[in-house]
Length: 139
Image 1: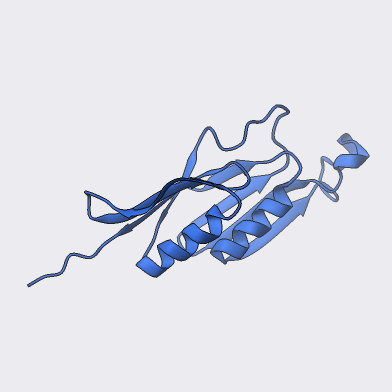
Image 2: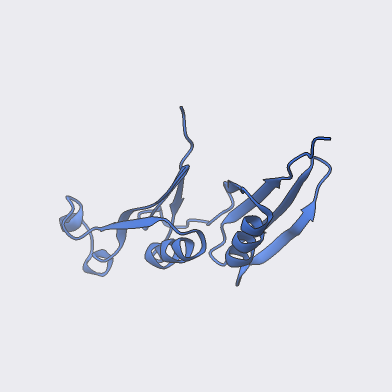
């Protein structure tokens, strides 16, 4: 099945942001720095500790990131990440974690489509949408 993986570009704070996302979401986090890569000899010394590639792997999705974004990068304005949650507790926990230090655009609320929904911009400028479809009780 085709999966959509999100790739985030940072300008020097990839390690900090990806570690934050792991704290909020859990999962396995891996980093590859420029040191030891084929690009190492082509980058200035101050960029050697930059993240070439990172991946946060959880069941159902992979979040990737890098410090190799182009200069003048405007974070978070070109995409959103949507988390389809499995419980009310989960949506509230994830929303609280991701919104810490950020900007809540719409707090978690009941929607006309039968879900709890909220969206926010996290403290790194990235857009998040969280949705939990409330189960329909059968008679």
